Length: 621
Image (cartoon, rainbow, N blue to C red; front, side, top):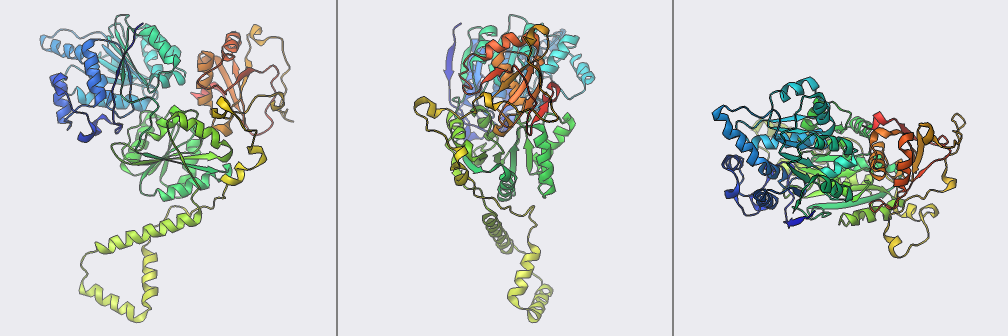
């Protein structure tokens, strides 16, 4: 298969394709856009196209399958609308002749999350507002299946959906994909990371072989390239943004701290970010809810966003964050995919992310539409070298700073109050004579300085929480014996430190636990087989992340994974006996993406000795 490259440069903008500024759009080519779409762009206030849109227009004329790599917010949704235009406009031409519409969609867009599906639907709707025959429907988990079936019964020409729900409708017969001529896999890399490989394969098999298949992906790792080889024909690469390049409008700041001081540091950072939208990333759904509740108890207007929320609640949460009713949104990585939130001033990572792509995605929620943003990473001091390695892969140079202390935060808040007061005095309206007479009377009875100081205190805006004391941890922890190790040289010096699996790392048996006796071969008996990975919750492991890595490394469906047991530095999980042999062979192979993560079979499983988090497979979905 031959692949041709078409690389262009794109300025990163707001998530919504409607947010492009004229000075951020390349000079451009409305002439190549179909008339109804051209009118929609002008009605929306656009005067030019972005570079990725121009490149896609050229590729559309060529009629090739596309591989589009571009930052979120660079106009790729509108570009996808251009790709679909020839077939969709042909449908509109049929309408006056009363010819029947197709039995199913001609364009199918598959996305990883509900929020991204809703965003793509909205963008395509305004783009095709002048084309009456083009109706866009969205099907996702968390919504009424019955209502979706009724909408699909109207045979919409464009369907946008998440893999699981799309496959449900295909298998039930509600969605007929036999006439799909344009198929788009948006954020294909994330869908594979989330374990949707089998669902994607089943959906693709339900579509005609003669179709155009387009991949939109932030990265094109080996798994995505293998997918392209299987389903694309001579794809054309359209590179909107150089892979791995972070937004230059973002200031990257890191704080090394002790684990016990993480919440105190977060409170101080949020106090300094008062008045701006702040997005806080956590690893798990439970953390999102607990942290949002804790911040709310301390006076912050914080809301959680995770996969366990019903769609109606997710919509209300995002609306509150957009309109300023909530200034802090605590989100998981999966839930934040496709967020369309303008003017996020600060992004806070409460723990280092699993990889550079995740960091780039998280931090990319700020610094949009030409605005400056800040990405703040909280990390244990002993993980400084590993974090720097991860960020180097994202082409990010982080500035390590001490955590804001209670005294420094209090001083900054006091200065902010003085500036606010002086600004209010400068803009104060003309006072009446009665008001001035009362002021003179007060001055005759009281000391002027004390009077003014008391009035200032009475007018002071109530702060959410008091600044917290944070111990200086970076230098102390980095110098402790357990945080030090022998110096490394050559290539090893560039690799992140990951706890090595040794026999003395085995779990100790709990008094109230159990020790599972070693058996000859569980895979022959059809029972679950235990495996272990050297990645625990202290290093950012969560059941969702573990599941994604396990499925990718073992090329296995998430349905074959049982309970996941996450301990401090390691995690243990179950693999169905019938899949264990092949899984074991695959995970032994070197992995260029995560070379220091080791997975090995556990011959005799013992219950964890200390704090651990046990999840069933259903709780990770």
